[in-house]
Length: 336
Image 1 (cartoon, one colour):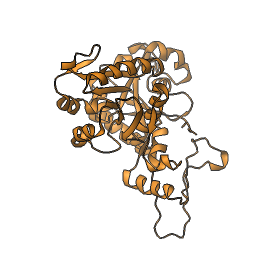
Image 2 (cartoon, rainbow, N blue to C red):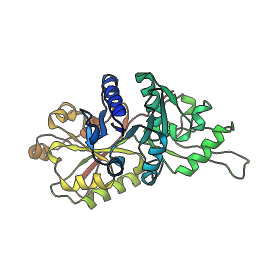
Image 3 (tube, rainbow, N blue to C red):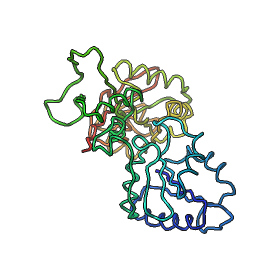
Image 4 (cartoon, rainbow, N blue to C red):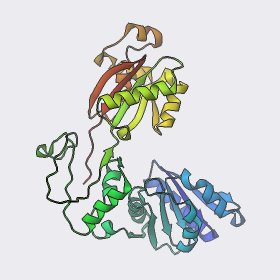
């Protein structure tokens, strides 16, 4: 996760340096940058000439922005940069008196509320959270989605159902069988029985499908995309639930795979042949593939090795025009 501190005074720049050192002890997987104005010459920061142009350029490049300045400055500077709540980064404010950390934007999906609580705990600040569901001790639909690392079907229905929750109305959560809560809740689908003419509902897509793919050299991106679409459709699976694509290391520079993953906005995870050899005997192998690249199977082992390993294969291996594809479903973790 990438975080950026933004400061416009020398004092705030030095506070950001102090905070960065403290956060590095606790947030091990975070990359943290500090932006300060060049005229103040704050050491160990990225010194910039102009605040406005730099925040415009960098706004979408970080997962979270922490501004140590007045809220009015921040609101005016980022107003034109704000898009939608499912895309915007987390935005937080800290006052120069080192009293409060305020979650300003993307509290749920962007993780600003959770980050505010973390910063408050580490930096000994008072967290200020204003989202209705949080301050009333209830949970929002987009928070459920964020905790499941899932994707909302649409923001409007999520907002409508969250309003029901906040207003104290009853909302049922219906879960598929690979979400472990209790056996009596297991289901592949649900039947909605209601005498209501209109009923609010929304849908969340869990990001828990791993696509393992093997292909010939110079396979076109459109052929790979067609294979993915056909395989998902055949097995009644949605592209919104795909977490990543995985392949073998010899395909690391395969342009068709790279472009297909980029088109779908998915990570392409590369698995080494040494790792594949440790598990390849679990799967049906090919003498030809072994002679060509040194391992007996690709799509199944890379899907397994790129997953959390706590689920099952939905598709062991299917072949479409020389492209092999396997689909592994991770079990969904429930956060309480």
